[in-house]
Amino acid sequence: MKIAVLPGDGIGPEIVAEAVKVLQVLDLPLELESAPVGGAAFEAAGHPLPDATLALAKASDAILFGAVGDWKYDTLDRPLRPEQAILGLRKHLGLFANFRPAICYEQLVGASSLKPELISGLDILIIRELTGDIYFGQPRGRRTAADGHFPGAEEAFDTMRYSRPEIERIAHVAFQAARKRSKRVTSVDKANVLETFQFWKDVVTEVGREYPDVELDHMYVDNAAMQLVKAPKRFDVVVTGNMFGDILSDEASMLTGSIGMLPSASLNDRNQGLYEPSHGSAPDIAGKGVANPLATILSAAMMLRFSLQQPEAADRIESAVQAVLAQGLRTADIHSEGTTRVGTRAMGDAVVAALSSSKTKATIKG
Ligand code: IPM
Ligand code: MG
Image (cartoon, rainbow, N blue to C red; front, side, top):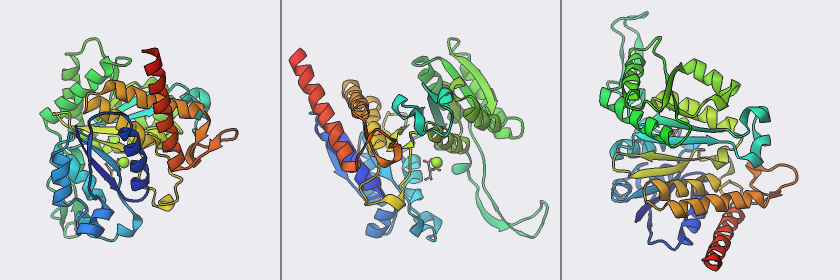
C-alpha cells in the first residue's frame, strides 16, 4: 500500500508528521514517500505541483495531504500559487467526490458559536462535487465586453457548467453514502436562477428514483446557508456542486466548534483518494508546535477505510482519538477550562500511546 505524503505549507509539515507517526505504529505494510507541494514546492522546484510530485501521487494508492497556501504567495501569477497544487491534483487524478463530515464532538460542544442544543450530536456529511462547475469550466478569462451593461469595457468571466454524467456519478455517491447513515439526502442548488442548477436538480431527482429507500429533498443554496445555522441537525447527507460545496462546507465545519478535528477525503472512480484536514495552512501559527494534528490523524483513518481497505485500523485510530479527548487533552484551538493544554507533538504522542495500549488490551483479550 503506497502512500504519497505531501505536507505542504504553514502548519502542514507539523500536523502531517503526527499522522505519519500514527500510521507507522499500525503494523501494516505501508510504503510512505514524501514530496513537496504548494508554496514549499514553488520554493524548491519553481512550481506548486512539480511533475515528480504529480507522478508520485498518481502512482500511489492514497495521498496524505497537509495544507497549502501562505499570504506571501498572493502576488504570484495564478498558475504558480500554492492553491493550484490542490486544484491540479483534483483535476489530474479525477478526484470528483469530496467527503466533508461535520461532526460535533460531545466534549467540544462548548467551542461552537451556536447554542449547545442546536449542535449537540450533530453529524452531517457534505458531499461536494470537486472537478466541475465554475471552478474548472471553460472558457474563462479576461476580454473586452462585446455586450452587457458596458460594451467596450474590460471584463472577466468564468463558466459554470455540469454535464449529466458528472451529476449522475456524484448523486450516486451521495445516495449510497446516505444508505449507510440516516437515509436522507438534501441536494443544494440554485435552480430558481441558474440553468446549470436546474439541470443539477433534474438529474439528481432522476437518480434518486433508483434509491426509493432514501429520502431526497432539494434546497436553494441561500436557504441551505441559513438552515445550517438555524437548525443544522435537520441535515444528514448534503450533496452539492463545487462552488456551493466550498462555501457550505466551511460554514458547517465552523459551527461544529471543531474545525481542527475534521478530516476530509477526495476520491476518484478507482477509490484512489486524497486525504486532508478540512482546515487550512494557518501560516500565523506555523512552526510554533501548537496546531491541532487530530484532523490530519483522522484523515489518515479515512484513508485506511476508503482507499486501503483497512477498516479495523481506521476504527482503532478513531477510538484512540476519542480516548485522548476523554483524557482531557486539548490543543489550543479546542482548549477550555478544566482540560489539559498540549502542543502538536504531545497530542500525536498521546494518540500513539492510546493506540499501543488498545493493542495490548486486544492481545490480552485474544
Ligand atoms: C477547499 C479550499 C480550496 C477550494 C482552495 C484552496 C483552492 O478552499 O479545499 O475548500 O476552493 O476548493
Ligand atoms: Mg474551501
